[in-house]
Image 1 (cartoon, rainbow, N blue to C red):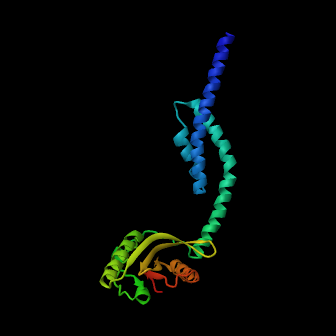
Image 2 (cartoon, rainbow, N blue to C red):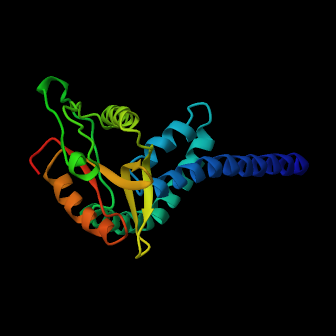
Image 3 (cartoon, rainbow, N blue to C red):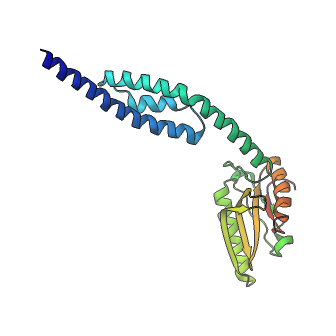
Length: 222
């Protein structure tokens, strides 16, 4: 009998160890996700989807206990990271180092962009219709600039979402950089007053960092 008890105890311990490893693997992925997103909102949803099963009651109970302990442990760190990164993001947006765009439905509003590209480059680019969808508008813009550059025998290159390293080691993310005859010009779309304020600030910053001209395409009065 003692031998049977020892075997059963050994099997029970082995099962616990296996369950611990399985739950630990799932929880590690969930914890990593929480730190990547700086949020614990999806913690329990992800846990119940990946680690709870009606066929493995004991394993689920052990997993829940472990998940609860880990949740209590990581919550302060995730909230602190969220607070710190939130302040950094706010500062980055305020300085115009990053523009945030949301898809807008402007196709039926017959809106056209106003721009300073004529003054900056001499290219007579007019009547660019605004769809409000940044990817579509960027493609239309690049296509039209390319046609004009070929007509005027200008060398044209471009890049999208390019990081610009500033003198103070900060990074500015330009939606588009138009490169005409080797001259790089960060280019921004402006849909609201926030974008307008951001452009004013980033234009001055980039000027002091060697980019003498910035281009805007705006749906509001500049």
